[in-house]
Length: 253
Image (tube, rainbow, N blue to C red; front, side, top):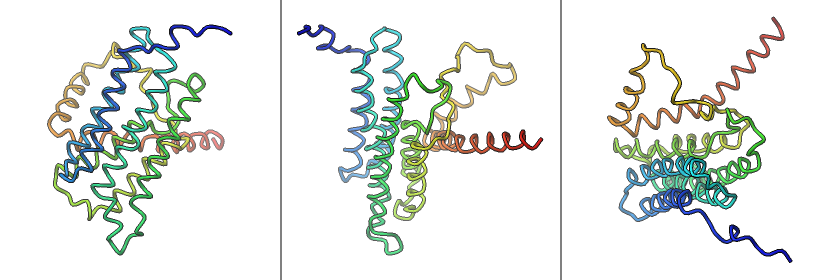
């Protein structure tokens, strides 16, 4: 019987530390949403912090040559909590649960919407894992789960900041959550930014754009981030329809 290698019983500390930090943010966002104190701004912001840690773990692993199959699987499990369960519970506690007491909505609309979102996140992550190395790195097939979470959490963050009443926004909350969920399991293609290089040249006339964008985010982070990720979420269907129209035009031309 072959002896197990030493590497099979060890894990790399640094990249998994970032993954654990992302998982912690998602877990704490759930606690903040359900503890009864209404800390929805804090809970939604934590999901965005989880996105930062999630974006670092893979890059750190590649830079330090500490990639592993364990890290890939651990990252997916952490993403399911931080970008699946956490956003679903946050928007459920802020708005969707009111559907059970509002006579104009189906009583089960709230928890069903949250469950469908969580399920679609799990399906999206599973599909991504089996398609690694097969699909074009320049695009994602389906909306990435962190971007979907940013749409849901960004909406709650914006509404909480401006003191919107979640009970009056049940339908809008449901539509945004369903859109984010179905976009994750769709075949719409989204630009991945993996081919974008920071060392690329930028025309001088547009040199101030990054500074303006950063300034806007720091000025009003909630609505700006929500708007940016909503545009990103919509660009997949729009891009797909544009390519279909262009293909048909080429056939008839």
